[in-house]
Length: 134
Image 1 (cartoon, helix red, strand yellow):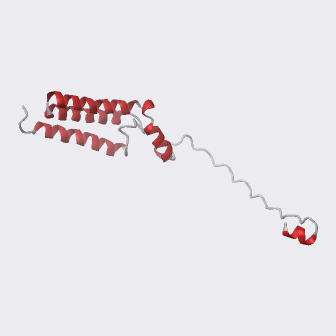
Image 2: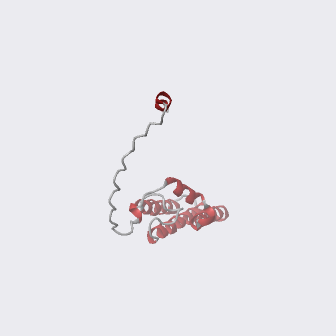
């Protein structure tokens, strides 16, 4: 634009060379779930959409059942119920393919299973040795 004003006529702009297109990458088939790129925003939106995730409702129902049992019959029964809910969540996580239900799929599958079954066994053991409960 400055050259136009100085010289009085339009100066042709240099043409940018177009880089050659990259050769197509051959497809090796569908990408496994474990290797698919993750979009954290999509994961967060999906996990917060409780109306479409039945696993959130089932897990919340198990916790509510645990509270009702604990208040109605006592701490030992409530602890056994919580241990059972954790064990059921562990079984569901074990049998469902990855990525699994949103409510119980937090980490890698082996770590989820270790934590769910470990917590169920620990709470069940503590309920068993709870003093003063018959």
